[in-house]
Amino acid sequence: MKRVTLIVAVVAVLATTPFAVDIFRDQQHRVIVRGSVQVYQTPEPYWRDSSNPVVATATKHDTLRVMRIRYGKDFMVIRVKLENGHQGYIFYGDSFQLL
Image: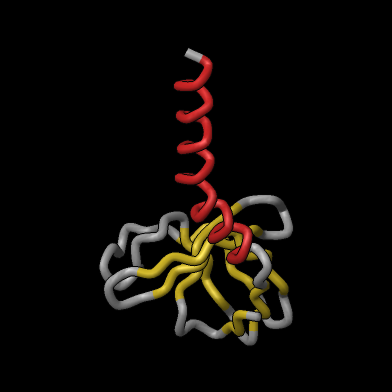
């Protein structure tokens, strides 16, 4: 029984390691806002879902912490953490630089 538990534990660690590494790499980035950037509530692109509300607006020279970078079929969305601790989504092509 201990051998089965050990095998299950090893498999679980091996299965989740790539996901954890990907998140770690994403979080090494920062976003430097170059103009006014709207931060949305959900990762659904605003041009596809007009009901995606704006939760904040980042202004020029703001630095946002990256939590996750995701890719859709024809877009890239970045989950960012705002200075007040809230999180939201910005879309590649807006006025910012990903460092």
